[in-house]
Image (cartoon, rainbow, N blue to C red; front, side, top):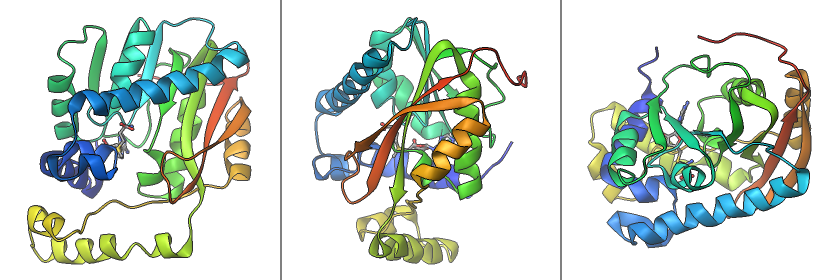
Length: 256
Ligand SMILES: C[S@@+](CC[C@H](N)C(=O)[O-])C[C@H]1O[C@@H](n2cnc3c(N)ncnc32)[C@H](O)[C@@H]1O
């Protein structure tokens, strides 16, 4: 188990401004925006992804869905409406608390803490849909992004699908991320997260992984990229949403 700075940062964001931390649109800043409108964005995104999935004939069953980096359950809620059950996984206990509260009316969703650098808590081939959006770009390192992409492929059931978004490139201006750097320094010397956030500083970091590397990783893990659809849900970033299937038969049996 890791008690990481990453978990601390997301916990603090969950406390300060949970909807904005999850979906950084001006409408949801500083407690703004309506919760139903916020969830409507998740329903729209999932609906669009499942339209593409339908063209691929996947998933064959709508049994179990995984929402990796679920935050407050914006997408888990939408997935639960389309699947028999949805498991939302996150590194931040406070995000998960908020997710449980905001989705207490949804019976077939479960929110689970995962502090590991992998998804070994879940069995190989145990999800008809593995979904992740606006998460991989915020992981601690390129190695961690690569590890989770391999894990997504491992978890896909026969006839299942993984759909995940990750930026393929970041402009130099964005890569410098001065607000995050100043936040990190001031937080280390003891300045409170609320004070920093009020001054427009936050700890959110952004990384990218090239399309070529994603394809390579997926294939190494025994999967295939069926589609890489350009995605504009995180406006300044050039992102793709990848639709990935797994070759029949598990290649690995690592599970807990
Ligand atoms: C920008 S939010 C997106 C939430 C959700 N996917 C959505 O689009 O509504 C990123 C989420 O990823 C979570 N996260 C960051 N690193 C993680 C990790 N290593 N494992 C699981 N979740 C993580 C954060 O706690 C946060 O809830």
